[in-house]
Length: 331
Image 1 (spheres, rainbow, N blue to C red):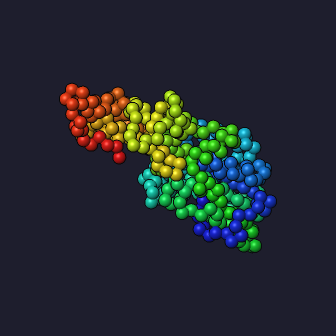
Image 2 (cartoon, rainbow, N blue to C red):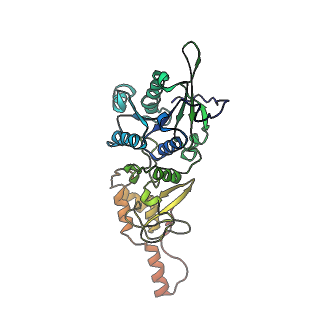
Image 3 (cartoon, helix red, strand yellow):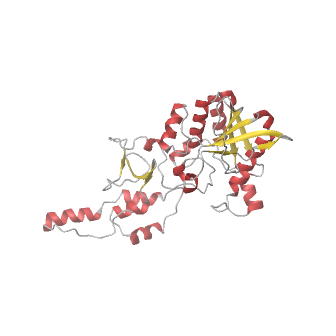
């Protein structure tokens, strides 16, 4: 959806003034927040749920999309480019998308969406509202997005048609936790991918944060006590376990509703190993997915050597000054 950066002087219209509403949907929690706003403010018969299949989606995504549309009671629109991600990559673009050239979005989302809207103006009526679920705390670029602007499909000419499309972002100032709550209110379960990755998007997405806490099973117990808990690390860390992404867990508060796990290197440092120790171990392990799990397991099955050294020195030698190796601080 090409941005116009033009703010409509008329502002956001009422539900009666819009003839149709399109919700850009990915099965992810942010677009679920956008869907939540739409169904709370518009009659369902006006709402279209639009999903762009890039050709590299999770296998269950399309069927989940149709199930959500049916469950909520809105009209599903499935779009795709017949070339798909791999076809474009291997035959035309010849390099993966990056931050400077996000051709995946341009070809597989923006172009197909704009084309569909232009081809269905008569069906959509004269005033359409396009809704997406961006949040400001996702990136510096999204922090600058306007809440409302004209969509690129807006057409102001009586010769062809008079079609106004506003692009609205109702979730810009929401925290991620609120989006999960809204999904629950709609009786929609989070996508299974959130147990493993931070985004529900194309499987090759360049924006995938590696260490963000995304699992509802961990997010929902931050600050709790008992075995099902996630403790926010402040002055010190507790016992290092072999799995950071399972409860009991400990997390770092990144602000804006975001939390992350300890990295493999941080776990090794907290157990008293030097960076040289860590690098030597990391060199013989292959990273699979988000983490190098053997490195977490090695740290979790270890003991914090400097702490034990200090205890024994105090008991046996009566020492009070700290000893042992340095560089056991997590950054």
